[in-house]
Image (cartoon, rainbow, N blue to C red; front, side, top):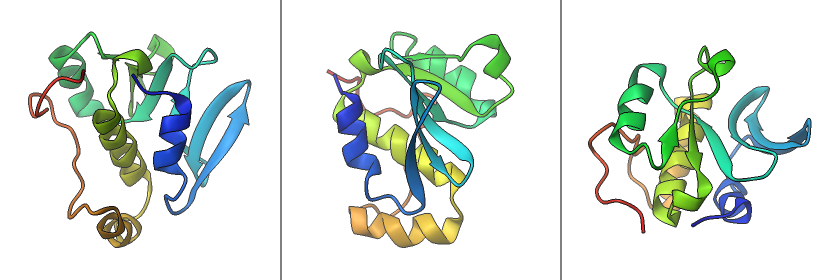
Length: 132
């Protein structure tokens, strides 16, 4: 299980990222684009994710992932239960969400400093092992 503070540790050094409290909800943005947000009770983490892959992600592990409410389906967005995430999966989701909203030159320059050679982008069926 991860917490919002665990997520902050991953996000804190990401270029162009900023933290905001909007309508009592914690959100992380690059410019005006939100790539990560939490429910008011901090039990759900929403994150940027390609629309064309989100149904497969949710189907791959519905105990962890779920779609946002109907009105938010127009966005590139998926949600996850924080209680079901381990630190590795959370880190992968956060970095991939951030990578979606920054220019390639920004993430490609920053990833080597994290010890990553290329972005991970979770695809349905590609998870190495379940959390826990």
